[in-house]
Amino acid sequence: MVGKIRVLGSGTSQGIPMIACDCDTCLSTDPKDKRFRSSILIELNGKNYVIDAGPDFRTQMLREQVKQLDAILFTHEHKDHVAGLDDVRAFNFFSQKPMDVYCSHNVEIALRREFHYIFDEKEYPGIPKINLHHIENKAFELDGVRIQPIEVLHYKLPVLGFRIGNFAYITDAKTVAAEERAKLKGVDTLIVNALHKFPHISHFNLDEALDFISDIQPKQAYLTHISHLFGRHELILKELPSHVSVLYDGMQLEFTC
Image (cartoon, rainbow, N blue to C red; front, side, top):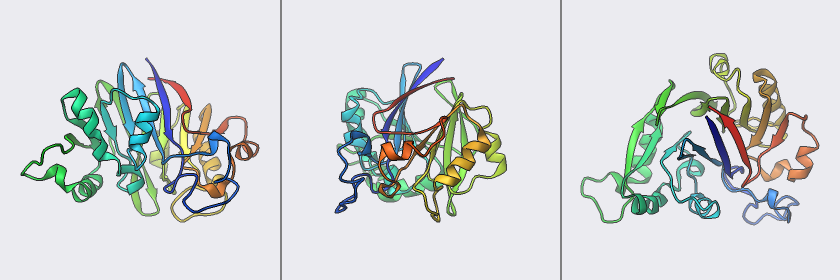
């Protein structure tokens, strides 16, 4: 089974351009330097799934002309990954059914806090409708497709990456235990975060991301969750080995499952 990945966003929590910034990256006219908050759309077996729905979710859905969305998988509870949940209302309207949402217990707590009106006993007209599915760090099935979570630490916060077939997606990682790395062995395509070149308390920098890729040994790796401090897309590419590239918004990839 062949799946397609569409990159909805490849930027960090503030996106690129960053508000009020006049650095070379933020002022770049290259479309590949315009980065929404990190998210991908997976098209598989006639179904569409999104990993993370951040503040740019509505714009991302409009840009990619997404007419059908079957589920959202959340990596963790930070606002740049969950803030767009309210906009599932449009999909509710056209599908006439709730949106399936897959998340950890910690994410559920955050959603119940940030989107309390979704969960109120007294239902307000027009609110988003969701079916919440609790997931842990163990494999589960989504429409017959096996999804393998990969737990990483974002400083001290647990974050879930996901492996589907020969593809894996990891964002907001700083530490990945040996047993979690073992779940990634054999992937052909790996997407992993690399914030910028210098050390950061809760994200891989470039050297750490390259070391991680070297350990996992995918056929091809792509960097995401890019900060404006990393520099311009074309300049980053010049510093990377041939089997590593940089995601850009709107990019499309294929994988097998």
